[in-house]
Length: 383
Length: 236
Ligand SMILES: Nc1ncnc2c1ncn2[C@@H]1O[C@H](COP(=O)(O)OP(=O)(O)O)[C@@H](O)[C@H]1O
Ligand SMILES: [Mg+2]
Image (cartoon, rainbow over all chains, first blue to last red):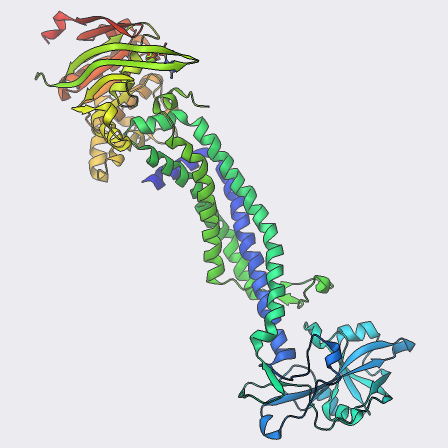
C-alpha cells in the first residue's frame, strides 16, 4: 500500500516528477546504449582478432617475443614435422622498403599461402605471377603510399646477416580492423621468405587451427586465445571506464534532482508527515513512504526509458550503428559498423544500479523524518 | 452511560526549553475523562490547550507527571506502541484539516484502515458509512482542493471517525468555519458522540463550541482555573 500512496504523491508532484523521470530514463537508456556499443565493439574486435590474427592460439618459438622486435632475429626454429598438424606456419623477419626513396621499416611475414584459417587474402599470393607478390593492409598502403600493382624495393638480411634486395609487388590490399596485421606489416609467401633468407623449414610461430591438439614441445610455447586477447580486453576495459564518466555524470544529475526533491519534500511536507503520524503511522513507515516515493522515480524512469529505449535497442542491434569514416584514431580501431550487444546482464545490472542509487538518495534525506517531533511537524515548525 | 475512565492525567507538567530558561506550558494538571464525555478545554490562545491534547494523543509526552490513556502510560510507550494507540483508539481533528491533497476524499478517509490492514471490502463499507455520517458521501471521489471549508472539515471528521476510535481529539475544529458550518459540524459530532459513545475532547475558545459541551475545563497559563460541568446537559 505504501507503493500506491507513493505513486499518488509522485503523480501529485506533476512536472517536477516527470522532469526527474525524464533525465533518469535518459541516463538509464544511455548507460545501456553505451555499454551495448562497447560490448558490441568488444565482441567484434575479438572476432576480428581471432579471424585475422590469432586463430585458436599461437605456438611460438620460445626465443620470440611479440613485444620485442629484437627477438625477431633469432626467435625462430624448426618444429618436428610430427608436431605441426593443424598449424599455419608464419616466419617473421625484419626488412625495409623504399617507397619514393623514403626508407620504411617493416615486419615481413611469410605465411603458408594455402592457409584458410585467417582472413588474410593469401589466395592473391597464390594467383600472382610476380616474382615476390605481397599483400598489405590499407593502413600500410596508405602510410607507404602503395597501390595494388605497385612495385617497391625491399631490403632484408638473410640468415648469415648479409643484406639482399629485390622488388616486391603489391598483389592486393586488404581491409581489416586488426591493426597488428596491417600497420607496418607485409605478407608474402612463407616458401619464398624461407628461400630469400636461407631459413629453410624455420618458423617463428604457428597459428592454431580449430582441431589443433596442444602438446608440449621443447623450445616452443603455446599462447591460447585468452592470453593473446589480454591486451585487447584491457583496452576495452579502459574504454568502458572512460565512457562510464559520461553516463555517471548524467545519472548523478538525475540523482541530485531526486535528492533535492526529497530534501524539499521532507521540509515542505512537515504537516503531512505530522498527520501521517497522528493517523497512526510509525516514523519508520513514513521514512519508508518517502523513500519509496523517491525511488519510484527510478521505476517510472525504467518504464519510460523502456518505452523509447526498447525500440531503439532493437533497431540498433538489428541494423547496427554506422561509424563515421576516420574514427580509426579513437585509440581503438573500429569497423564501419558496430552491432551493439544488449545482454540481460547489462539491462538487469543497469536497472539495479538506477534503482539502488535512487533509493539511497531518497532514503538519506528521509531519515530526518525519524527524528522529527510530530508536534513540531504538525505545526510546520521544523527548519 | 458507563463511567469507565479512559483518560487520566496525574500532575501533568510540560516545560519547554526557551533560550537559557524553561517555559511552563502546562503546570500540575490533574484530570480524568470518562468514556462518552463531550468535553472541552477552553481558554485563551497560549493557555496550553493544544499541548494537553497532544499529550493525550501521545504525540507529545509530559515533562513530569503521568498521562494514562486507555490504560497506558503515554511516557512509557515505544514509538510503535504509541502509533498503534493512535491508529486504533484515537482520532485527531485539526484546525487546518490536514487532508492529503493528492488523495481523494475516499482515500483520505480510507487511510487509517489501510494502516490497520483491513480488507478492501471492509474499508469501502466503513468509509462510505462514515462519509454518510458527515453527509458528504457524494463527494467520495473529489480531491480536497475541490471542497469548501465545511466539507473539508467533514472529511477530517470522517477520517477520524472511520476507525471508530475511543477518543476523538479536536483542536479548534471550528476556527476556520462560518457559523452555519460550525453548528452543522458540532451537531454531527454530538450525534456521533451519542451514537458511538466516543469520548470527544475539544480545545476551543469558540463560544459556539462551548454551547455544545457537557463539561468545560478552563485553562489559563497552563493551569486549570475551573472544571465546570454543565448541569442541564447531563440529563441528555
Ligand atoms: N515547542 C515549543 N517550544 C516553546 N514553547 C512552546 C512550544 N510549543 C508551545 N509552546 C508554548 O506553550 C504555550 C501553550 O501553547 P499551546 O498549547 O499551543 O496553547 P493553545 O493551544 O492554548 O493556544 C504557548 O505559550 C506556546 O508559545
Ligand atoms: Mg492551540
